[in-house]
Image (cartoon, rainbow, N blue to C red):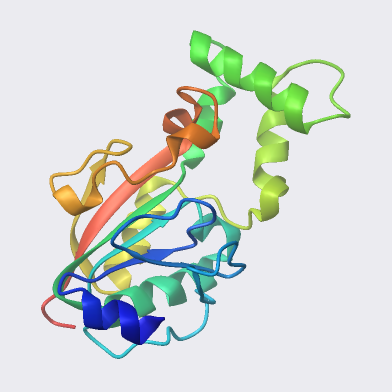
Amino acid sequence: MIEEYLSRNNIRKLHLGCGVNILQGWLNSDYNPKSPTVLHLDAIRPFPFDDDVFDYIFSEHMIEHVTYSQGSLMLTECARVLKKGGKVRISTPDLLFLMNLYKKEKSDLQKEYIKWATENFINEAPYPDDTFVINNFVRDWGHLFIYDEKTLRSSMERTGFRKITRCNLKESEDEAFRNLENEDRLPKGFLQLETMTLEGTKSSAR
């Protein structure tokens, strides 16, 4: 699968932890592939690629499912397999999103999110409340580390990326990174509420 993809694509794009969001033109990979078209890849072990192979790497709501140190290993491997000047895009839950849920003044979207999350995922909660939602979010779905912007930015810088910028969901200055996140998997507005997205460029020193 790897050889076939690389032989057919001059612009090479790796999608880490794709789940059911299979992207056209990308080498889609996942630890538990749900399609025969998806490559099995363990993102916390050395990637099965040579150095300087890919132009782009994208990962959505995956890095929070491994520990901080494992996430650093993943980013290190991303830098290794990217060409010099290649780019990575990481979308992940933002710790600030959880902190904002706890504030007294809440937007209508935050109130809707708390109600939805409580009713769908927290059977023991006697009523919709921010405290239940925050506790559940940190522990549920296999989450192991929730980043804030400064920590993710630091991890990217330490593993070989520069020109790190924050982007809105599905938006980018680079056309290859536009409209990638699977917004339809949550009710309208919720993925944007949860998510922080950072893009970085592989340092020429690597």
